[in-house]
Image (tube, rainbow, N blue to C red; front, side, top):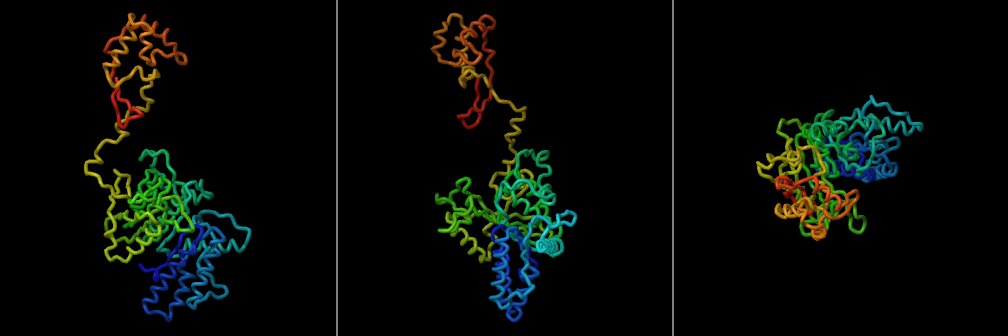
Length: 432
């Protein structure tokens, strides 16, 4: 599927959409020149810019810049836009207007209404086969403003609580809405095509995205995923111990964003092959510039797939898109939640400074026998410096001891083994 032969729809990547249609058109130009089609190249490139390469931008400034860049490219090839002609870049919300059933408020300015009508025509009628984009990075996008946008991610929430036991999740991040939009447009409507996103990489294995991953596995045939690293939120470091720069960092200009990034390519070709997820994790240079260069250089390798490892998404690993190097028996082990099947509790809360518990049974037995023994004076007992001899709110230590001695008898049978997760230890220790 070549860019010179197919329609391309570029999702609103926010703040700089012009880069995507521009590079797509440059690739179309290179393809046409390689076919020795110079005579018609300018005409075909202009037709592609007007009728086959589409982009949506919600911000006016990037929208204007995109048209400027495309206009200059076409002018440089001898195919300048004439009066009344325009490139297929529209000022609109990329997430709405895909369904005629969703009522939209009519805009008061005729030019804006006409712009939206043209964009909606592309969304509903154009034979889209390729979607490219860098969706906005906003983990706190909040609730959608329209019913159409709000309904986008509902399929990714179905069964999260009842089936997967995931009660806390964040699926309102903007890029998730673009994922669902691309799935619906390519997999469900066109039934074939390609999607490529540069996005937050949390969806690859995060528990919140288990239904999203399951959807994609059912919708597409093959996935290629590059982990571009650079997660400054967790202070990620490269193998050489140096700081892993975010992939968007530009030396002397911008430090980039904080979020770790993944590039994913999804293909639906209906060839009947088993779904395959290929994951690449070797692009781990500390400098973003070196990492980008390594990725671009590797594209020329005829054995390109050798860079990838096969992931094996399944229900047992929540359809993780990351390869896992574990033994076959690992997934048969009981989960922590299974080991803690009893109703939730706050654990052992004896509230006497640990005086009523001990790892050493003998030490606890000696202490309690002294506490109950009438022959052991209060001063001698206080010398142990335990919580049993210290007053606290509502607890008068000496008076309580006297009351206990008059009403109870201590026996060794009252000591019980108890599993207790100690805050200063890793694992579970046993106390008496």
